[in-house]
Image 1 (cartoon, helix red, strand yellow):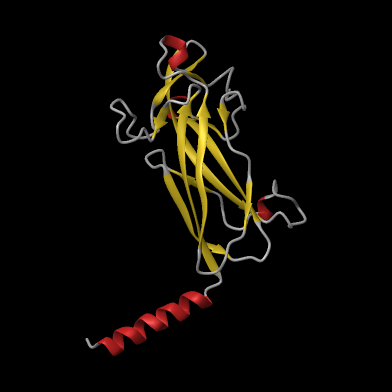
Image 2: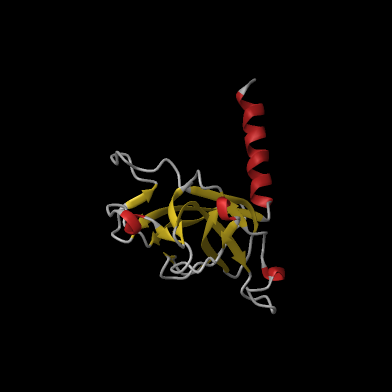
Length: 188
């Protein structure tokens, strides 16, 4: 294929992208323990790092129970009359990312001239207890506050790295090294 048809195809793709009325949103996250030691991702030089945030050590009452940490992204239009607690004000449906990743994206978010509110949540799940805890107590998981950003057509809005602090001590032993899903997190 000669250079001219390639240039025409590239120009057409560029014009189509510029005419799009959506943008992409990306974010990354890291889970750390109360001492700031990485849980996931652990980093290149961390030997005992978790490979994901699935089946971490937890406890519920007197029982040891594995749990998984997921991240959920909520994009709301704060100008919506019903308020961001109402599902009708969400720009796109909430997206829950698997416990096997530390990055996520929402590829098609409608562009806007006013900022959207981006809320990141950490969700605890313990399948052995048939438990999913969407809003654990702040003493259990410290999560960054919501952010407001514009979404521009054809561009990527980067929400940066969100650090989520989990109230356990990876270096500790016994109950210190296990997250209390019941009393501390309020996931009863």
